[in-house]
Image (tube, rainbow, N blue to C red; front, top):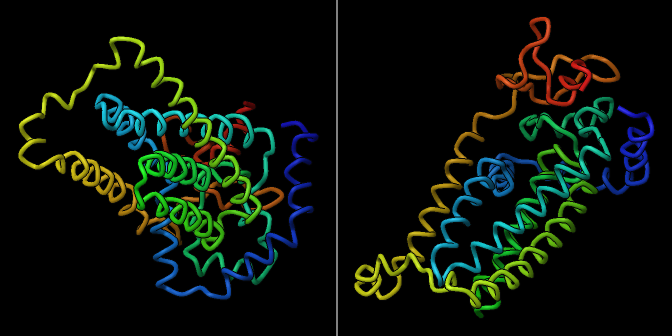
Length: 295
């Protein structure tokens, strides 16, 4: 990795140090079992295990005329946010996680252990969880708001709670989540505008008449149109539980940590997948595995 690129993450650490530490102290001072549970609950909305199935749900929604705009907005927003955060910014900034850079700060370390000592396997800036939760939440806010549904205002609240949860759990700096909120919001707006464009193109072609909902005409009539919203809610709940339940076993002493010991003892979660095999019998996180393999 280029030393020039490395200093970008270091510079952000220095510029936002006071800002970030204030928020760590704020959330650290209120730690308790109930809030830790809530933090894990809300952080799930940005988890990969939640976001990927939501993309699949978005694709399914595109086949139904009444939900097509929700599906397209969801897909475009997630795609834009993922590309910007995970493909462009994280590999460029290379900001190290706070539980690696602040190991000598006693109060932070106490809060990190108190929050369950969770870990991730990549870089810190910006927060991928915050970006993901925000792009989904703002995308749905724009869609529901356009339909004049009051539930629209619930989504930004979820995004903000997810952002706060990442700092509460001590796995992200507040500046990480701030930029995650900005990127996620912009991604959602772009996704919504792209949806508008695609819907215009659909209306000008025969594709606009495609509607899988016609296959369920009888069910729709019997339930007075309530079957579809209920089915979507059940699907989202199932996706959420699929992502949330495993979180109970994450973190703590049982987590397999990266074996890297250099400038710091890396507390990133070691990659156990076949794509990242052990090196000399030791497991490493995605970052240090690539370093050792010269990638």
